[in-house]
Length: 380
Ligand SMILES: [Zn+2]
Ligand SMILES: [Zn+2]
Image 1 (spheres, rainbow, N blue to C red):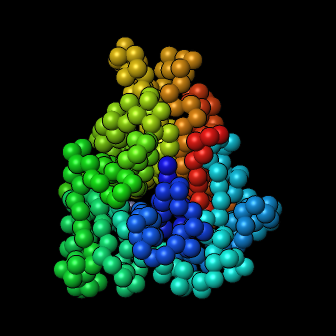
Image 2: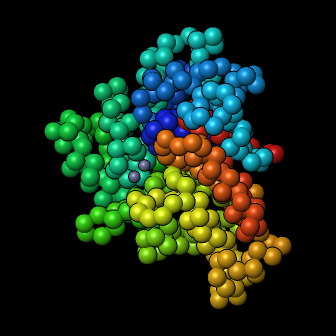
Image 3: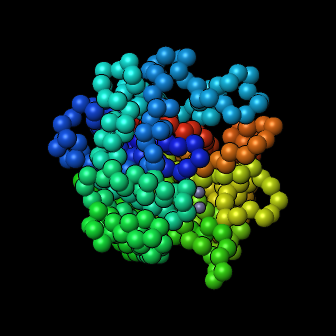
């Protein structure tokens, strides 16, 4: 059971915490207990700045169920966040509403941010691009304790050689404030904290001089329930990279989908469909192509590869009563904010849902919005 919070509009950070620990409860805990609860997280930047934008009020009040729009196509200056969510088993809330100025938590924004940052024990870095990493660096002067940072060996190497190298930023690794943990793909399952194990798989993310640049996906598993969630960093489809990184992941997680142990995928879809070049990212068409590949692996596993000769778009899958991705939550992140007549979120959401219907996938798509929390409700 995880909560995810997309915290910053132009960066790609998600904050995960056990559902047993609400933000309100977190602020009421003594420091020692907060540590024991491992308010664990993926990536967080400049909480103080974002936090102030996230404390607009109580989500029970319908007037607060909006975010400020930066596009012209909305009738008011607000966007209703429920618009980007199919009905399903996800609940949306303002995670920091309880620490707003009128709340019972009487901490100033900076003090509250400091406390949040220092409660984070683990950072999972999908790849070393700055929009996914700057939060770890910029917030490091406020660290009271050492932080564990996890990722692929090459990501850890880049962080060591290009960031905390004494030139770009002080060498906090030698000082013992940053502990880098390399996760070997397909082999290692790391115990990240009392709650979660984590595995890391490479994915392609654009061309570099000597081949493909690698980003990654994290499979996080609740130690108690064995429920998993998979969270992708930036990536491109296998169809554009001509590699098979994503297919390997779909094959690996298809048994979890069939056992109903993985019902949420967090993945990017940064751009509307457009002609190449597209630097190492996903569009609605390529995301759906990847999800069709996952569905095919589920069929192959369930029916012992009898369907293997069919293409992923085959009517055999479309017309089947068995639909392995039905009610799967796919939470879309990293929609690029670009000047456009129509909000790209709206276009991407619409196109994903059209293709979802065309291929009878039955997926619940949600577009993640900055500063909002998504909570998977097992009881609904
Ligand atoms: Zn990137
Ligand atoms: Zn990015």
